[in-house]
Image 1 (cartoon, rainbow, N blue to C red):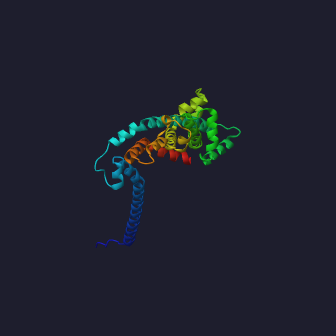
Image 2: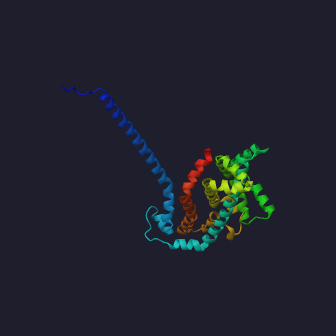
Image 3: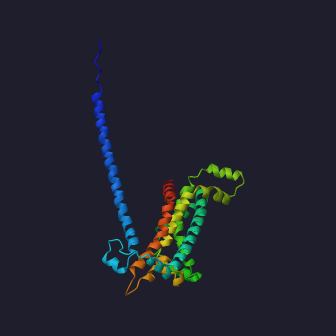
Length: 296
């Protein structure tokens, strides 16, 4: 005679399935809320940029009368007017100042980070404290003594009056980021290189720098962003209009009686485009470098 199949444990399975479904639903709701928050944050950040780009194709009257609509006539000549009105020279000045600042900052910071991460010497802790102190020093506080120093050095109204202060103010942060990344590199690689007759500089440029591309590119992005958008030093240390960078040069587009806002917004779009493009192409290295260099 066939025995009936046992039903022991079936209620427990049903309860587990219900519990799993409830947890799954709660998890999906949390994920949906997270995505909704991220989308809302993206709209808050991206909409002003989108409005600037769209308004750069409008006339001044249309910007004030139809601020939230698409242009009735797309005025591409606004960009031509902005470029020919001086943006071209401001753009080239910004490229030169930003490029030199990034090169000097990364080079000096890599040398300093290598010394602080691989050598033991007296005063090492004090130097680290100085680097931390440099992060708390505001540029506005040192404006007057820095102005006097630049005057005495004879570099006032030159690009070096911008490059040297930019490098000085970015070095503390970049040294700390690069040093944290260098500490994660195995010492066995350094010892093997020394056995092969490699010098300290050889180890730095042949081993540490090639292995540290994410954090180096991260520091390049951070330095470029700061230098490209810096305004205070650019208007105080430069008097010649032909030497101005974009943030200071765009002030020339403002007029006390009448301002062509379409042309001005075109200049702002040209100013913002390089940094946005740089970050889009290097965001993978930027995120990886920040994650690796900040928590090691």
